[in-house]
Image (cartoon, rainbow, N blue to C red; front, side, top):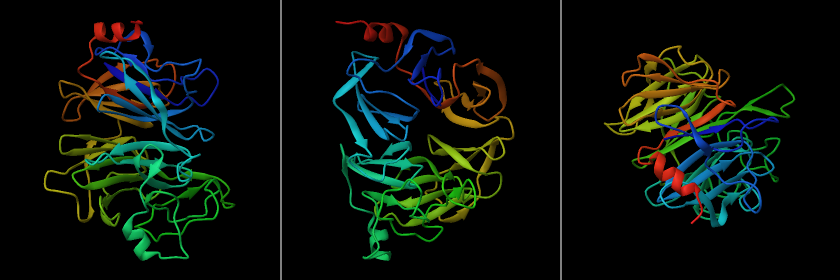
Amino acid sequence: MWYISFQGENDGDVNNILVYHDDGKSHSNPNLLPTGGTNPVLKELRGFVIADNLLYVVNAYKEYSQILLYQSVKKGGYTPATEPIFASKQNINAIVHPFDLTFDTDGNCYISSQDTNVVTAVKSANNPLPAASYLTQQYPPPDHFLAGTFVASSVGALPLAPAPSPANVLLPQGLGVNFTDSTKTKVAHSVRGVIYYNGYLYVADEPANAVKVYDGKTGEIFGQIMGSNLIAPVHLFLHGNVIYIGSTGNDSVVCYDLANGAPLGTVSPTTFIDNEVKHVSGLAVDANGCFYAAERHAKKIKQFTSTGKKVGDFITNLPDEPEFILYVPKLSSIEYRDALQPD
């Protein structure tokens, strides 16, 4: 099965995670998440993660700015957990317009938020960890950080960041940020995808044209993946030891093999797909090792071989611009159908 989240920004857009069969055909019951009644209102869904039979979903619309929590029903569908809001800007002020999330081996959740340009570490539901020790050592009071800040912004005083403004953290430790114009009243590009792997947090710094690597305990920057064919990274995807990076600035996908450990200093990625995916967004691999990349504006998903050779279009004419995609190998059509039917 395939799960796909969508832009969801305009009237008529998709505000749910849609389900497709392994062959790319739409499911007869496509909406994965229940809506209406007392269910959470969904708007602009972005990253989502399945962990321990729980589904965590970024509900990105800036007025909501939530991570929603769903529990599995039977072997397929999901229903809101007893406490459906795992994190939100109402409880953790750093979470404004979230984009992606990831978990470490201790169960801590790391959430990237575009409008504050930070990555927030959350220990449990609406319970942020203290700010990263490296940050508090380098920027002692009267400097301060938003709740749970693990990776900080190079510019703290952003238009939609809560007051008082957090400390400015020097590049490259701090994340880059671009504005729409010289008045700096609206952020154009900021932090995007996040992945935690083998003791390090990987963060897509779109304005800096880099994937930054942070020590998973202290929050100190350890290295950067940048240069070569990487421009404006947004989506990150890990398969085995290899991290794949959507290079939106040149319609490509690059990769870096982590088999020998996290990159120390600045390293260059390897080009995996060169100028073949326009406005690249979600990335995934299926059970056979085929690689997939979503094209936002074309509303399609393309298929490639395991070595990055183009196979062709996989799903076309999507009902909205795709954001994140996920292949779920253990869910059969019968299991999904049964999960949607009441007991």
